[in-house]
Length: 452
Image (tube, rainbow, N blue to C red; front, side):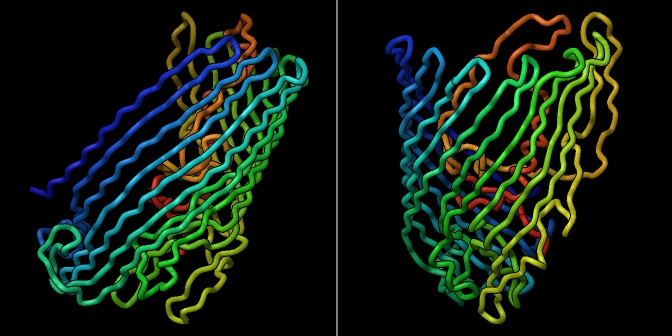
């Protein structure tokens, strides 16, 4: 009949807004969220507990944000403060029926986060615009981890099983750490003419440190110290606009991202199972180009397309050697997931290029495959590293400043004037996902980064 699974999630939010005058608006955003999961993962798919994972997860968080929104004649902006108070806990058992043991792992992390932020756009002329922003974030975290091995193939006390004395106490500690970072951004855009806009942007990103809930202190003693924040410097040059009498709308970009103290979850076989640990492995880079757009072939038929070029590599990958009990650089032995060692990757982010009919002449939709190299795109989860936005930070979402109002003019082919809103953003998102490490707390992800 299978195993019962239970998931409950609830939340509420309150947004209040006060228009002080034509230039200034005050906004308050208050929210709370609670979640609980009770599950059993039966990896072997048989009635016997050959490899079962009974588990529960529970979390709650409260957030409060205050914003001041500014709207001048030639400038717009937002400034504010942000607060988060969260608790996340859970436990799971690794039931190894053939070995007659169960490994229980449980713990919690309490987080308090404070941030101040600002982001402003300035129209220096009719064609030249500058955007500047910054955020300062401070996180205080307390973590507790309990990992123990018990005799018997069944649930341990950590997941509600009967009281028992551990055969081996693998990990048992409580620790507290604080992390802080200042993350700025700046971008400049210039309208070369009524149809073309060029831009350049630089931003820094920050992903908070934390504690590894699966850390085994017997195998990796440094796990009790937690891991440090991860940072990224991101650069981008781009050109977007129209061409061919506005039958083509397009967006193109060159990008480069430099990651430092990158957080990566690695799994290494041991004599009794698998040792999983989170480390700051070192440095990596990703760079490439993208081009996407929409072409009006006739007044009733359009083609949407996108293509990207990516290259990703580790400059340093420090991993703890369980045999020598020393850290070693293995950057020449590992590659970034979804890339080929020492090679660049061409990819179409969409699964198809679609030819779409519009207007009063239905000719149907004619899909055409456009995928020379298949590059899977893992879900970033609710909090992977976002290298482009100091406003809102990386770990905790802040406000997204509304885009500058576009100049809207009628167009005989139905293509809107002003700032472009192109149909596909997958190529742009892909380069941010390739190097995204497995997250630790708020932005949990199962994105394995390595082929090891």
